[in-house]
Amino acid sequence: MYSMHPSLLQLAMNNSPETLHLRHGSSECVICPEIGGTIVAWAVDGQNMLRRTDSQALHSRDPLRFSSFPLVPFSNRIGFGLFHWLGEEIEIDPNFSPEPHAIHGIGWKSVWDAERISEAEIVMRYHHKRDSRWPWSFSATQHVRLDGERLYLKLEAFNLSEECAPLAFGHHPYFDQHGAFLQFDAKHVLMNDHLGLPTHMLSPEGSYDFRDGESVTGKNIDHCYADWGGVAKILWNDRPLGLHIESNMPAAVLYIPQYGESFCFEPVPHINNSLNRPAEEPAMPTVPSGGSYRSHITLSAVPAHSL
View (cartoon, rainbow, N blue to C red):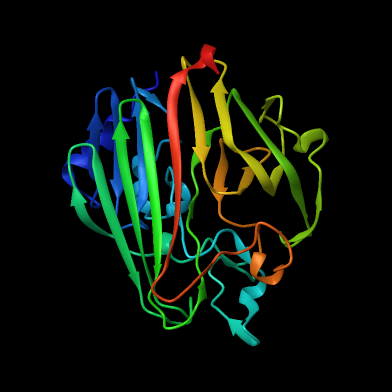
């Protein structure tokens, strides 16, 4: 019932498009470096732990239809692709028409190189030279590793410009929505305007409060949570395994489309549109020339009754 789609595994073996297959014990993961450095699938004991990328989605080459993709050098939206940095107005290309904003960074729409791969892990790198999408040069590495029932994402971005620059690195995983319950705690949730940009912070209450665990079905949420506890749990009422998620990143974006088949819980380094809201925490990380930003996410498949 929960095994990865046979055609997906066949595509992984045929490398069309180029995909790489990791395995450790009962855990399998399919990676696609050439399409945004994305995760195509992750399953444990035959159960999909992330939303499965079917063969049509894989051939679409659209990361938004995959299981997870990297968020570098920023997360979520930069309003209208405009912000000020060190007294200078910066304009970057909008990349998500018809929205007028820049969204999700640039790594998800770029080709990554597989620098090192073994049976259970892969290191991918992306090198960016300053352009109209982002005016600072940087490189980024994703170290994806399976360890039994765990999937580790170790993320690092290096500032290659000659000045300090905003630089961050998160990830955008999708999970099956049907029968899913989500639990996490956070101090604040950001309310949005009609363009999807944050306006003010509140304490999570009502439909925004997941501290005791709530069904995601029927909710309509696309909000950033600030100062979350670093641990989230997902279980499905008809599946033997649930998920325990840990990350060192101080914010999280929760996206639950009301009539969708999947939802997102994204550990991220800063609030949405943080470059235009510099006084609010967690702020966009600033990295000196030659320095780096590091983050990690651990997803552990555990028996549902133990969550």
